[in-house]
Image 1 (cartoon, rainbow, N blue to C red):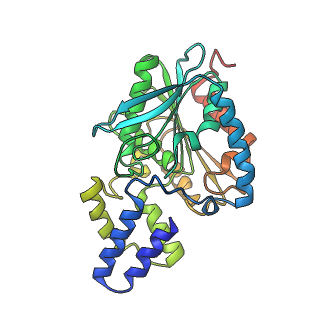
Image 2: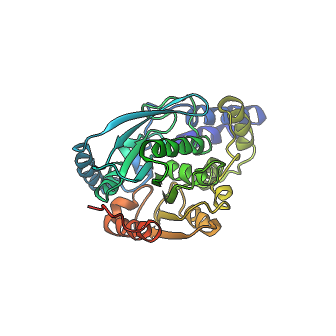
Image 3: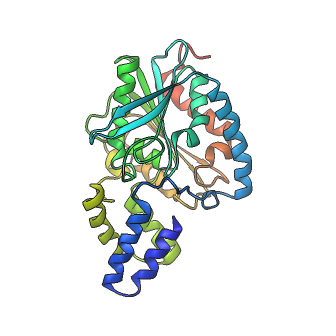
Length: 323
């Protein structure tokens, strides 16, 4: 995403007209659907480490894909068809994990490792493609602000499928983490969601872009973010500052486990710390040493999974059909 900010930053120096052009460039490169773009892992963690992480991802994905699955869809409140892969426990479980991926990725890229983790513990696992990603429809990426409503729709789907008396756990990484956190404070959030796991979530798109402008270019958010906010509202139907995880944390809807790598150079670890401090529900914070962005699970898989297991057992109990 740095190349986007660089384009905007270069234009800012030449005046108001160029500031508008810079803001429009930022919008056009970041918010519309980005099927040809993938976040460079070198921005997230050491490239050599990712060679080892990918081995873990492939191992767990291969295990997951040996399980039967079903392609499922829902309709968003703005009439988009959203897609997911449902892995149903045998027998079908009264617990379902719904998993959300990060920016410019897809569910089956980011989530198989944790989906397999949940399946091994007797959960159904629903891996979704967020709007404007993968197989899901959409022209504009929602950065959690729009996706939080989609998240609630997916929970409603799981309850209709597995019973209104079933329990749901939400898991999200990066933008997916922001999605599940923002959903928890949104009107209509189902009480059946008993726990949230948010890995390296940002607090809002406004905050993350502001962070990059300051860190890399020593620029204030004004005027480019002000202009970009207006463009985004007009074209995509939302503003970067319309909602944040801080807004949601006041609701205290359910227990939340916050996870972050201490070497995350993309989404600063302080964002998870700030979310943790703002959270009014039962909570836990795990900082993984030597982990870059979205790398905590692979940097210390044992600690990561142990912490998730303890958290789930504390707030949901050990599932009686756990395998």
